[in-house]
Image 1 (tube, rainbow, N blue to C red):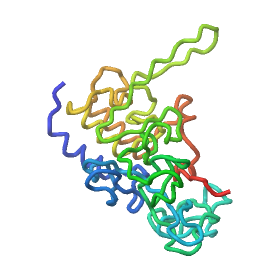
Image 2: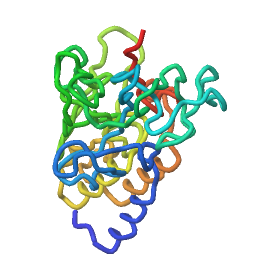
Image 3: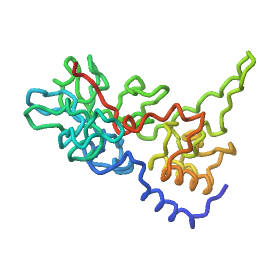
Length: 282
């Protein structure tokens, strides 16, 4: 199918202004490549690396190397989190107003600092760090990779917390999900949509559509990526991504994916979607 360039410009404008909720200023840094450590909002900001959501680590002081919830700020008990009454909210920084745990505020030192680095080995492999000492027996590095569903840094699939998630680097093409078998015993027959997701544009099957996923659909439409890189962008199964399918995906990014029995279990509670909290303290 030949795509006319006349629709490309307005479509790209729509993709760049849409907000997916995971890319606010101060929430993400480039991991790996020549832009390592630079601020980013979308994948194209990072050239030969990836744009990842940062995690907070206490820099110095009594809690040096331990996790904190509000990079560049502290967690205030009031106002309380609207999604979890026992939690507070970040008083500033890139996560201002988001849910947090005040017990994880840093004591002394330089406060809570955001980082794109994670432990490459050792007891805390896959957990965020600022320096090698934070990893005990391991080393602290920028991985240049991220978990496909939630965009947190990783070195391999075992670092990703979501079931069947994948650790991707630049140019990663996710595997096509295997078809669901019909059970031999009587009962309701499970069904799958041709694109592998009930939400058009949800390439990672995470329950929402991100800007990076929208850009991936445009690349598929232009013939720069195979359809296998986002089966969810092709709900009718004709192995092509059309402008109507892209516009449907944009609508899902703006208004949220329709909640159905097929994808409802994949959508975590609102306060869990805000941050993947790490817990090392006891």
